[in-house]
Length: 120
Image (cartoon, rainbow, N blue to C red; front, side, top):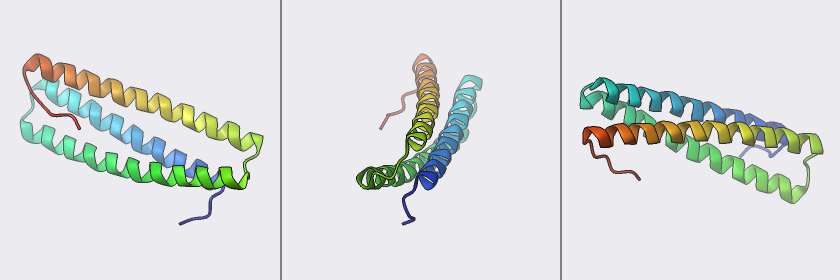
C-alpha cells in the first residue's frame, strides 16, 4: 500500500469523484434507455457497467478510509490539508446526491412502466 500523505489522500478523493461522475453518467444513460423504451439488453449492459463502477468505488473508499485513519493517528494533517480534504468530501457529497437522484428517477420511471428491479 502506498504511503499515507495528504497529497495521496487528495489524489484518491479525485479518483473517487471521477468514479462517481462515471456512475452518474451511466445512471443518466439508464434513465434515457428506460424513457426511450430501449431493449432490455441495453439496460442490462448499463447495469453491469454500473455494478463494475460501484465495485471500484468500494475499493477506492476503503483506501481513503485507511489513509484517513493512518493520517489521523499520526496527526500529520495541517489546517490547510484539513480544508482541502473537507472540500473534496463536499464535492463527493454533491456527486453522491446527484447519483442518488438519478437512481430515484430511474426507479420512479420503472415503477410507472411496471418494471420491477430488485435493489441491493
